[in-house]
Image (cartoon, rainbow, N blue to C red; front, side):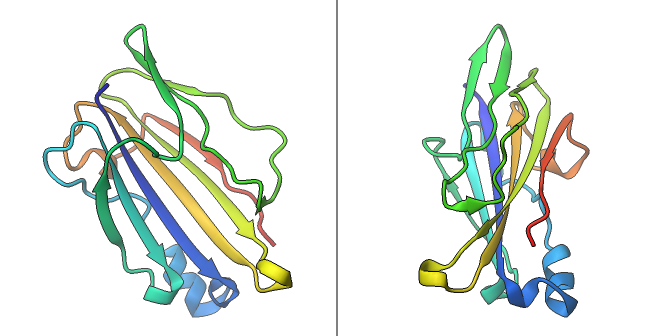
Length: 156
């Protein structure tokens, strides 16, 4: 299976919910240029408030991309991202899987709020999954996605 997944994970606390912190967080990109030569891999990008949303990147195998996909009849079926039971808000209805033809790509976004342990401060996260059914050039995710699913919710 020739699939490239770019998972962009942005994390923040209450400090970045408004003002200059929110402006910096909202300016963080959700797509990046891929390293050259990827044919089947996870390009993992993380940005955190504590690092001023500077992106840190690495390349991994596809053993745990955070979503499930299957290939059949020449199409790639991308199932919704996995959710943790510790996150809010609850999503009782979630979108169905998306089918990609070769050369197409999908952007799926979902956000979360996490309650701190023992009543501690909340933290927040936005996960953006960019999925290309190869062939994928390094600039594949810089254009307009063929399919887009937006599961972002109001986080309070």
